[in-house]
Amino acid sequence: MSLNNLTVLGAGVLGSQIAFQAAFHGVKVVSYDINEQALANAKKRYDALVGDYKKDLSASDEQIAQAFDNLTLSSDLSEAVKNADIIIEAVPENLELKKQVWADVGQLAPAHTIFTTNTSTLLPSAFNEASGDKSRFLALHFANRIWVQNIVEVMGTADTDPEVVKATEQFARQMGMEPIVLHKEQAGYIINSLLVPFLHAASHLLANDVASAKDIDKVWRMASGSPKGPFEAMDTVGLRTVHTIHSAKAEATGDPLTAHFVEILKSEYLDKGKTGRESRSGFYEYDDNGKVILD
Ligand code: NAD
Image (cartoon, rainbow, N blue to C red; front, side, top):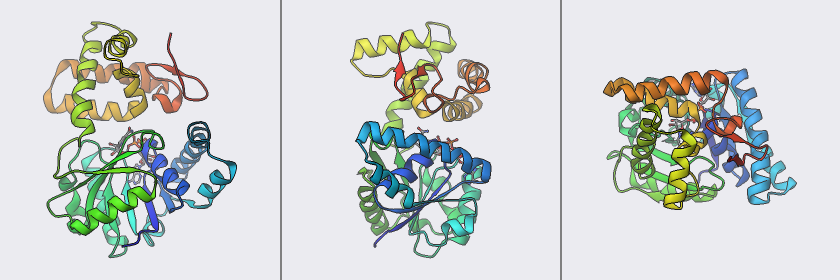
């Protein structure tokens, strides 16, 4: 199975990174988002990524120009998917939205297209049916800042054709990633099975006013030797996604500290345009190179 044309659905924090990484590695990519405004935001993300690739990977002007040659932006779904060999969906983390998107895409994409989702917290088996073909559907889960943290978890469901898993693993290598194939579905994959309880513990400490975000991070960094604390990690994930995940948790559990953390995120950060590292402002401020300013 040779996969040459990729379509990425959603050009937000992760979708833009995925599309640019693949284009940089020579894949023909269509980056789809819902309207012209969303595409204008995507263009800004692509421009910002140029700086990251130059700084972190010493990318040359020629390599950057080639990446842009490989990248097309579109807000027309049927045009965007009509030649796709593989689709990576990176739309907001909302089950009903993902079902709707896959129902539309399943109708429009060619019969051979591999369907993948970058969902962080949902199981692919919760919405693979919407696509119309569960055998071609699996999860391909990236970690933020994919050009340097270039691990990707490949996770099929009980219905995924093993050949599709293999082809997706190979494609991931083609786009410069290190794929890890999971043996079975696991909510949160490996990374979030470890990370989510950690971030929840941190959010409870903050919402319960035990210490400031920066002090909680400092304890973690200095005591464990880790380069980043939990709040800096949240800035990197993006505070919109952190808000969505904690809102769902607050609703599901009724836990008042989680609900309070959601309020803090909204009133202190998101309402002020502080969406985390990508806006250079979140729990921390970041310099023009995206480097955290620790005080
Ligand atoms: P984001 O909010 O930054 O971007 C989502 C994008 O999807 C926006 O540009 C939005 O306009 C677009 N969109 C909305 N409705 C759409 C539709 N119907 N069709 C196509 N595009 C649509 O979100 P994100 O952080 O990039 O997360 C996207 C997905 O990736 C989520 O499932 C999330 O769980 C997952 N993910 C995120 C991270 C992270 O660190 N941010 C890491 C791994 C996986």
